[in-house]
Image (cartoon, rainbow over all chains, first blue to last red; front, top):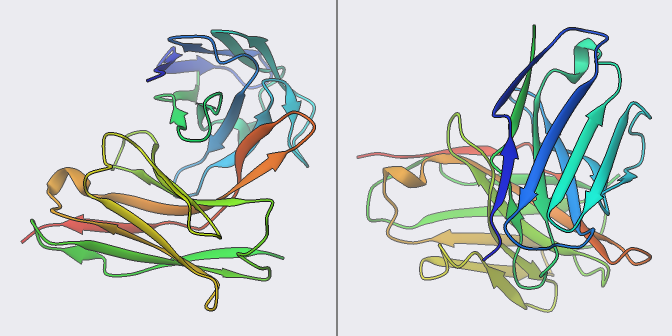
Length: 109
Length: 124
């Protein structure tokens, strides 16, 4: 079973600053990784798939990178609407398995 | 515009079976391009994939829940359903249904459409 570990658990950032979130896989998932954003009381929203491809309508300030076991989601200049929880999800061995990371909360500093 | 909507009891007693249905509107559940899935989120915690189903009925489950989970599809009603047996307080969560879409160019799979979620509390 592939375990996805996200760090840090909480990231305090000022508006306009850059945020860098990490996701690590317990074994290689190639580039088979997606990122989601979840705001309080809402369902998650797809941001990135294929480790670096932005989903439809996602602003360019969101970027993903990495392959193998180390991945990064970067928000280049945080806007007020970006304060949320972010999850990574691997689909390298789909089917039959999908796995989410534990999440990183991005909060206002 | 395709939408997903969860429905079912918000309160389930311990040891009983949790049953939820996801109704797909604005599109067909029988599309060959997608799987359909259930994801849950305990209060204040992260996301956990429960399982997914193809319109033909093929199912895949999280190994940690496999012994208690059944996901089924009713293409005539454009719905898919979740049953989780022998529930305990640890199964209290918001349950989401979602579409598992694909980018064939990248062989990527991702949950691209979600329902709003429904809170299910396990309590006597």
